[in-house]
Image 1 (cartoon, rainbow, N blue to C red):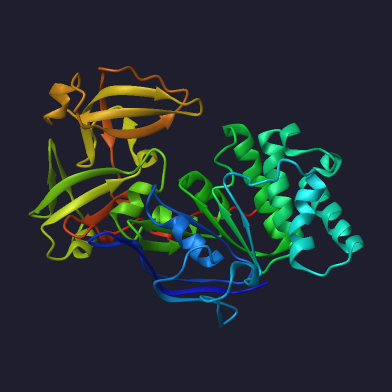
Image 2: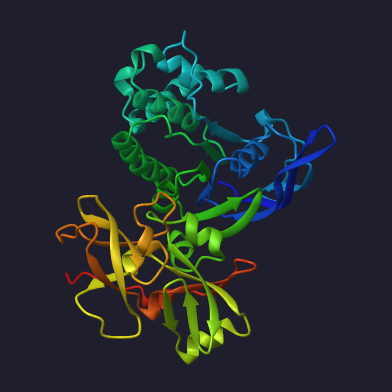
Length: 388
C-alpha cells in the first residue's frame, strides 16, 4: 500500500523551435488505497502523466513521491508499480500461466511454487483459472483483458496504473468489467491511478476524479462534487451526458438577458455574481422540466427541434420561441438546448413546449474566465436510509 504525490509536475517535449507543454504544473495527493481516475479529452496529458508515474517518461519539472520517497530517478522496474495497458501487451507465444508469471520470474527470486500459488490465486480472482494453459490467440478480448489485469495483480505492487484498459471492449463487456475492476480494487486495497477519456467510467469507478484539459489540472473531486459543484465551465461541460446546457448572457437590472429569453435572479443569486456583467448560465438537461403552461418567470416558451429516445428517457432538443434559432431549426448551424424527460412521455419535433428552469438548479460562470460563480448545493442530496 502506498501514498502517491505529484508535486508541481511538468512535462515538456522539444519541438524544433520551442517546447510543447504536455503536462503543466500538476499537483495531486493520492491516498493509500484510493482509486483515482484521470479523465479528459484526447491530448489533455492524462496518459503522459501516467507514464511519468511509471517511469516511462522523464519529469521535466516537479517531483513524484511514493510514500514520501522521490521516485523521479528510479527505473520503472524499481518503482513497485504495475501497469495495465490499453493494448493488453500479452506475449502471444506464451500461455496465460506463463504471461502472468513472467514478470515475477524475471524481476524476483521468488520460488516457483510461490509464483504458481500467486498465479492460481489471481486467476481465480479474475475468473480465468480454466484458461491458464491457453494462449492469447485462443482468448476473447475480455479474457485477454483479465489476463493483463491478473498479470498486474500477481506482482502485488504498491500502485496499479491503468491506461484505458477497457477501451477495446464492447459496450456491454466494458460495463461488466467496470464493476469487476471496482470489486477487485476494493478487495486488494491497492492505490490505483486509472486513465480514461470516458467520463462515464470516471464517474462510476473513481473514489475521486482528476479532470485535465490542455495539460492543466482543472479539478480534483469526488464524482458527485465534480458533477454538481464544477470548478469551472470546462468541468461542467465535460462531466455529464448529455452535457450541461450553456447560455451566454449579460446581467441587466437583476436579470440574465440572452438570445430570446430573460432570466430573473433572486437577491442571493445576484450576490454570487457580484459586479460581473457577462455570465454564462448553465443547467443540466435533467433539471429542465417540460410543463403545460407558463406559470412563473422561469418558464419559457420553446419549440421542439429533435427528440432522441433512449429508452428510460427522451432527450428533447429545444429552442426559445423568440430566439434566432427557433426560426432556423431546419439549418444545421442552429443552436438548441436539451432537456431530459421520462421515456413514457411523448413529444414530437416541431411542437411548442414550455421549459421550466428552476433557479435552485442553475450554475453561473464568469464569461471571461469560465470560473464558477454559483453551483447547485450538494446539501440538497438525499441520503437513502433503508428501514430494516
